[in-house]
Structure formats: C-alpha cells, structure tokens
Figure 1 (cartoon, rainbow, N blue to C red):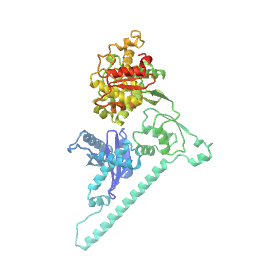
Figure 2 (figure 1 turned 120 degrees about the horizontal axis):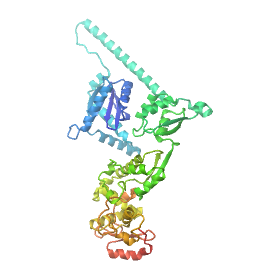
Figure 3 (figure 1 turned 60 degrees about the vertical axis):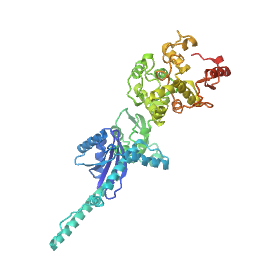
Length: 538
C-alpha cells in the first residue's frame, strides 16, 4: 500500500511517501500553502495511486491538543473535501520538528552544507510517516501490501479444491493489479522526465546558432503572478513541454520560499526545466532595477532624500513613512513624534538593496525591517541585550548613539561607558545626541548658532544637558551590525575593570580614543590629546 505523510504548517507542508511493504519513509519535498496545495496533493496521490494520508497531529507537552492541532484537523477536512474517498490517519508528532532539526544539524556537521527552512518540514514529514510504519505490526504491513482472500477451513475435498482455485485467482488478480500499477508508474515516470527535458535539442543549437529555434524567447513575469500562470505562459510560448510537469518540479524540488522573480527574461528553448527554473528564481539580469544604499549612521531624513533623488514623490515617501507597520522588530517601539523624531528612526537597516523600478516605498521599508530582523535573530541580540538589562528598543537606541560616537574597534568600550553612566545616574554626554536634537528643532542653526548655545538646548535628545539622564527617547541613526554587537559585547577598555570603571572618553583630532575614570582624568586627557584645538561644530 502506498502512503503519503504530511507535516502541516501554516506556510509550508512537508511531504514524504512510503510503501508499507518496504516500511521505509522517503522524503518528497515541501509545498507552499498558497491555495494550490490540495490540487498538488491530489495530483501526487493520483500519481502514486493512493488515497491514504498520514497526517502529523501536534500536541502540547502535556498531550493536549493546541490551536495548531485544530488547524491541522481543519486542513484534513479540506483535504477530504478536495480528494473524495481519501483516508486520513492522524499520527502524534509532539516533538517531530525538534527531531527533524537535530537530524539536519547532524548532516550540517558532517557536510558543512547549511539546510534551508523547507528541509525541516520535509524531514518532519518523513519522521511522521516512519513512526506510523514502525507502529504497524509486521502482519498488518504485509496484508496491506499483498491482500489475500481468507476462507474458512473445510474438510470436504471439493471445498479444499475450491479454496485453492480462489487463492490462485486472488494471486492472479494481485499480480495483475501490481503489474498494472508498475506499468502506470513507469509511464508516469517516463512522461515526467521527458517533460523536464528541453523543447529543442541543445546539441543542434551548439552547431547551428542560426536556427530560429535556437534564438532566445522573450518572456515576462509580472509582479505577484502566481506559479500556475507562469507555467501556463511558458508552455504557451513553447519554452517548456508541460505546465503540469513544471509546477511539480517547482513545488517538490526547490525551497518554497524561492519563487520566480518578476522581470523580463530571454529564455532558450534548448534549456531544461531545471535550468529555466534556476534562471527564474535568480532573477532577470536585464530587468530594470535600481540600487538603494543605506549606510550605518544615516538617519531617516537622509534616506528620504535618497528616495526623492530616485524619483519618488514627497507624497509617496511621507505616506509610506507615516504608516503603522506591524513588524516583529517594532515590538516595544515608542512614539517619538512628539519630539519631532521620525517613527522609524534606527530601523532602516544599513545595506545595499536592489529593487525593481516601480517598487513601492512601503515594500522598500519592509525589506529594511526584514533585514534588521535577520541581523537581530542571527546574532541572538534580544537575549544578549537582555543580559545587559536592555530591551530590544533600548539596545537599538544605544547602538545608534555608539554608531555616531566611535569607530568599529572602540564601539564595545563606548557602549560600556554609556551603560556605566546610566547605572551611575549620569547623563550620557554624547555630542551626537546634541547634534541630532539641534537638527530636529533648528536644522539651519538660526537660533542655536554656537556650540555653547547647542549644549544648553532643553530637549530630551540632548544628553549633554545634565537635566536628561539615561538613553534618548529613541534611536538617533540606523546602527550597523558592529554597533548592535558592541552593545551585546559591551566591555571595559583595557586598564579598566568592574572595580575601576571608565566613565569618560574623548577622540582626538586623529581619531585616537582616550578613556578616564574620573573627571580629573578626563580633563587631563583633553590636555594630552590637544582636543581643544580641533573642536567640531555641533
């Protein structure tokens, strides 16, 4: 009996298959939960000539069903509605995903190859199906694979003869059915592999480039175009042999997070489905794209100016930046607009981005937020900030100030000094915060014309004003990875310790850092460094 194992998730579904006679579960792949999953599963069930599904049912550690359990049962009901006559068995999978990740990590340690998100679901489905197979008695597995007709024992010779004939007939029927299934499976296998081959002989194209069939075909993918439409258009353009085979390949041989990218392509008819799909997920080299570079330390105001120079209108930019984004990295985020600060200050992660011309400002912002989230999760920053007594929001805020105050090498020391001053109830005393406050209230310096005026500015972002201790209300720039890590790895400079902490720092005209424990040491460092001769305008 053929079986299909499923690990059901809200974004992806892991798929495995098995024959109960061999009792070995084999991973098939993953497919995205995009409305087409039941159609694909129906085709797979038809291909394997089965309607038996083993579905993993998650439970809590105490054995009770959860919200995910209800989601899985609802999914199973829809599966029954879409595949009439299908049989579903729920298999407990409390710790299946954990076991799947442990298996994959063992593979990573052996091969060094990093596994992708979808591989966990595929491995989990395999474990679910294997657990079910191992729970079957040997006799049950054998009878499921090789059905026989059982008759009551009769002493009458005529009945014994009839029994033998019945067994022979059952054997012939079984052999006939199995032979038919083998033939059908072989034909499907031949069809599928043939459909994945190039429409036109690539060998001929190498020797006859003038052949019309060897010339690349122009092909366009629109933004948001579903996979089924892309496949149908490829077949209509004569680029592939079968839309169905292309969809099957795309769903079961690649990460579901990787989808064909919109753009204009030139595709050769001498390319296989594998080559074509790889080209589509890598993106069009000739598509109209633009780059946006956000540097660590830049502000939202500077990013807005870059977007304006790229052709976006003030209305598009301001509308997008005034939206309330429900994003994970913004949890605990505070409204700083009452002080004139940008709501997204500090959250537009520094990187060089590529976007298609016409991309919305909202999607550009979301991409920056996604990259910041990846940096936070990849470096376990929430936990590491917490060890310093900081929330994520406070950690980003401190990193943004450190970003403006020191180079990469000295950033962990500067972050530690700021933490020391916060613990001691001292103002941070960071010039960069004063500059930021002045840019908010008097960008043209019409009122605050001298440094002395600026240092006395009554504003919560001005940490040179002794009235304001602790962190600023929010970030003052977009911190880079090094600044974020400097908060997580904040430590005393050389020569200082928990008993002899550094509370002061300064940078001389050449960028060299000086540290001090007391104000007297700080004043001496000013004299030694010659800082007074190269004072910078705030």
